[in-house]
Image 1 (cartoon, rainbow, N blue to C red):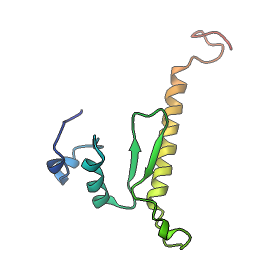
Image 2: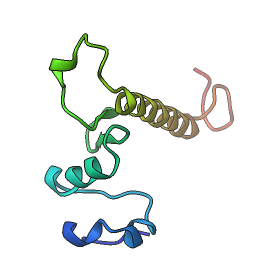
Image 3: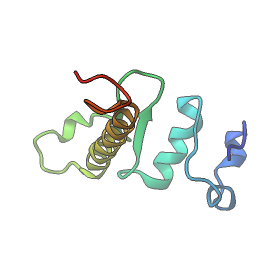
Image 4: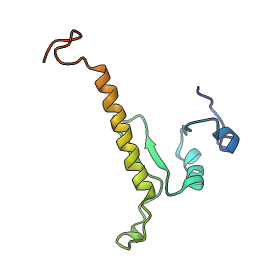
Length: 109
């Protein structure tokens, strides 16, 4: 089921979010501030509509933390894990669409 469009100022409440698996925000400023507030350091940004799998951390570069050992890695690990999961799903999807070599569904290659 899909619902919407919904106004960003009323979408992000516990009751409504308890009924959904994800939120698709059409604009950066609609969804990201709330996402950062609710789960900073463990959430993942996913870019849709591009021909590659693109996930990214939920924060900026924080170059001032580079090399200090102080940077949190939660969002990076979550982004990498999600990219791997999405890649595996895509591989399974593509494999399910291709006829097997030498099968009745298609010629041997």
